[in-house]
Length: 125
Image 1 (cartoon, rainbow, N blue to C red):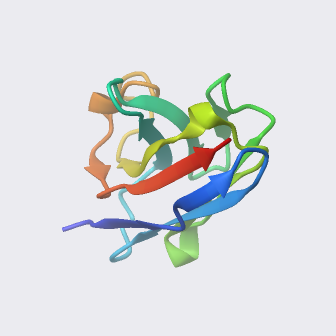
Image 2: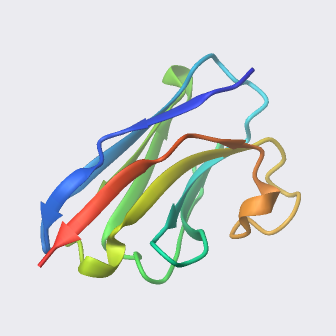
């Protein structure tokens, strides 16, 4: 069974940076894309970023220019570099994997197949 494990969350001041990591517990050759969603208190889970096996990257408008997603397929590892963090970035960040990139809209969480437990990111003023 595929398991995704996030790390790197924490407390940071506004304007600071954090780097999240996601590791797949075993090589999941069937995963065509990996991504990040986040959920703030009292809000629905929302799309943050995604990267396909071909290297295509996508970002939510709210993080574009500040966040960078990268992936090393051979190591089954993905990172999310978050710069110039804002208070509104405070949320639990979830790593996710998708078997069929073309199946369903990428920014809808129910179209993704695998999920990590999440890591808390808190941005203070």
